[in-house]
Image (tube, rainbow, N blue to C red; front, side, top):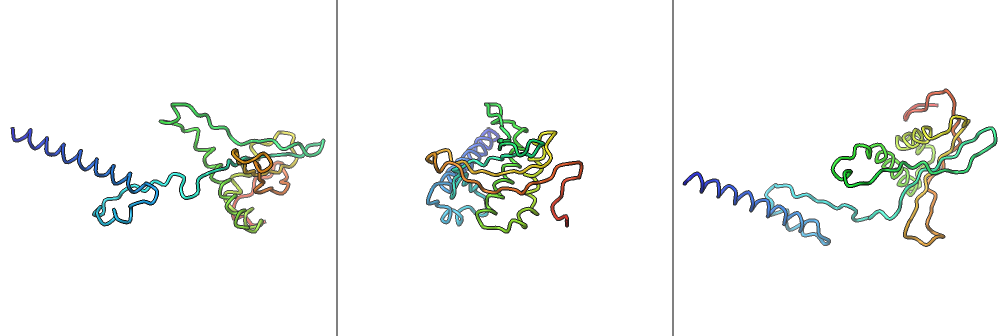
Length: 187
């Protein structure tokens, strides 16, 4: 009998603590958040601060375009942005998203550098640039002698004349048997 009361009390406390935590989480993550007031009541218990897309929601997609030089001259630009499959199982487990996510993050970082007028020489020595360059090299055709990549912001909801905005265009990068340059290399 006493054991049942103890189990009931423990279960009630656990349900109450979970409910309080969920309510505090919702309050903290609402616009004009109440988190300043909640911090003094949490007693050191961390409340998640999910901001998802705030304060700057994503309104554009970044695309990686590549063109090469062959014996016939420069080829047209082609989009080599990885396509990530979206299905109901990817909500639970999607290991194929890691590579494209890393590339997307690198392209976003290059967008930030470009928006902040970073020096091109500094940008070309950055790790995000190296990652995008490696993805571009992987997409190059076998007969390519050199390649150039272009990062393009695409604003799907913008009017047609303002839908695309170039972010960064690389110089022509010779292709061959030489090993790719790594960040921090002098040359």
